[in-house]
Length: 66
Image (cartoon, rainbow, N blue to C red; front, side):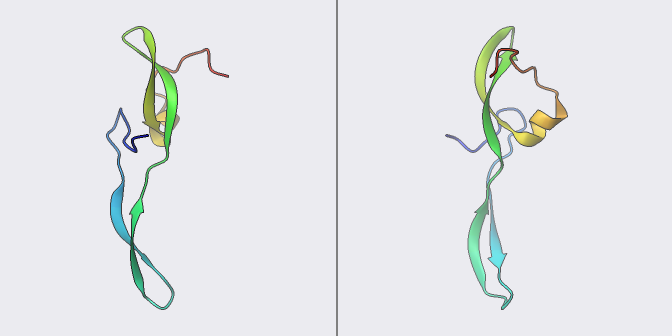
């Protein structure tokens, strides 16, 4: 599954993890992507959406979710 939000384009970014002794390790910061059914142009399709977009409520979710 792609780790990119289909609405806002949020994706993984590179960074560093720094321990108490200040050793650094390269890592990735990944967004929380959920696969949800949303309405696009009047039909239900599955999209990858980050949880920030879900919290905003500016996407039309399908009412038939369990």
